[in-house]
Length: 86
Image (cartoon, rainbow, N blue to C red; front, side, top):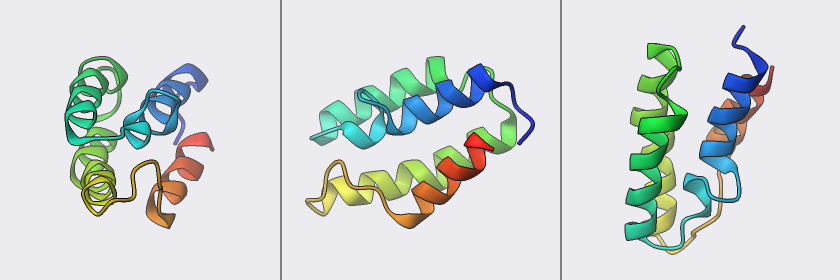
């Protein structure tokens, strides 16, 4: 909320973009995407966003992947996507 447009776009693309966390097909690709996202996508993000992504969104996306549903996002992820856009 209140973040600059480019910062919001970086976070949303890092999570849900073509090479974001939600696009990973396997655990190895997911872990690589998480590392890159933490270093680049969340580097300038507020601490609250970093904590939320690390504890909630990353965990849910990993569960989707390990349950055999890669590239699937649930309502929680869509909700934060909506919040980040606004």
